[in-house]
Length: 462
Image (cartoon, rainbow, N blue to C red; front, side):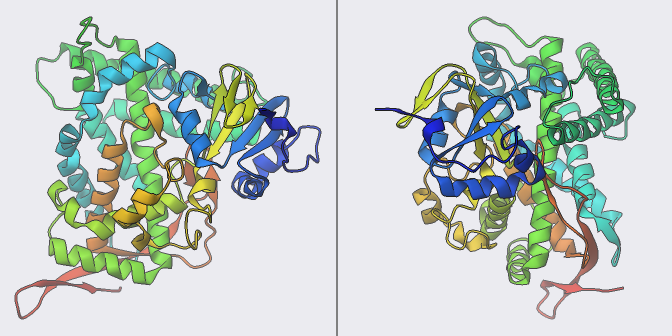
């Protein structure tokens, strides 16, 4: 007989608001400790029934059944920013958009952006100097934003419209984090200063995006950017295309998802490499052997096996998104357990990626674990940095390629070391950001030519 999830054991409640205080104070630690209660852990967050899933089969079941388990109320708050784009749309609207956009993100098309990624990274490196102290997270955010703006609009981030869009995204992330800390108990319409700034930023962003869309519609020039491909995408059965409102929503979604997650993944990667010198040395040895000092290209990626293992392991320990939720749209059953309509189901990559049942020495940074054999035996629903099921991130290929190319380009030219004593605190909001950035010292790597004519890397210090 099926059992109600709220008859299952869970963490004790110490407050009238249930587990809200524990979740808001340290969500990563709280949810990790919840793992000991079993495959489904009942939680009470205010008046909303919640549960945490720690069984990968249950996670896969929820992610596969997109109509029965929709985006959670907390995530739906993003609709004021992203509208009805792929990240927030539901049902047939989402299905139609996904079908229309899928060819745009085919790997062969995405590969064309590899050259832009490396070019913009080298431009950034020209402004770096040996011995400088940087916030590497801020640097990665600026870089990936420039790249995604170029790939979407074929324009530079320094243009007027794209500056407005970049500012709006930053305001939105700050606003969402403030809402999370308040557990969404303060309504968006309430005239608090951060709410006013947020709404004004969206108005300005909309004006800028619509201007770029209108300019593109009027232009006779052909372009290979993502906006043009989305505008050209056509339903094969009906001939229907995206209108300006939907294009705006897709563009806003691509900008948020297309730079924030990769920037975070790379920021945590630099932190981990600085903390593990043997992994950094192995990475640099591979880059030297494969690239010989040349800028990486997309066709080099299959030969950069360890580089990609580093990215996978970094996204295991510090997933770009640490926690997300689904809401039961109707009474359902997961395994032997009853899930009532309206229950919010929490899934945490942070919890699953560090699960000792599936990863030996789970808190250790070990890129070598990512062999082909290991990945084949890993159950689905355990390692999900890009989600899974029909709603798996459409930009997964773009993000993986970008992370590997940027890592290879930067690691050839600079060694990045953490500034001792600077606090690094993971902040799980929409994405997993370092709360106060990551301060590092840059050490330039110079190319020297040995007697046999081959390049070798040498550190120089100011």
